[in-house]
Length: 136
Image (cartoon, rainbow, N blue to C red; front, top):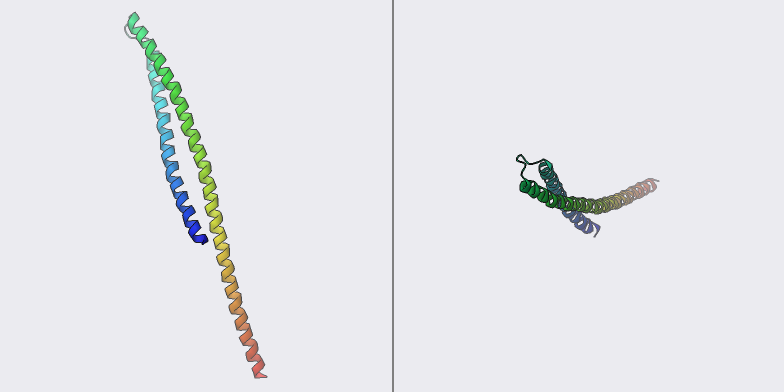
């Protein structure tokens, strides 16, 4: 019964591990997007090569839009990291559950083995006692 439950918990742990990998990749993608937007902001902060008023105004407006996108992307990146951290806490909890079940099963199996050995030893002792008593 416990072994079946352990198998289910191990399967759950495996799925959580796969989900963690997916969340880690997503968080990295979000951070990469933020870094790219930051690079674009740096490019737009430079004065235009040809100082034309319309070009400068256009560049300023694009900079504002990219800045808003960057701020939004930083929030998305932080949310992805928080989700990853939350998921890793769930994963650690599940890992502890699996290890606890493995130890419990191991202790129970060891107890059964010891009881069997003691039973066999008692039988051998009883046989030895009966042989000894027959000799007399």
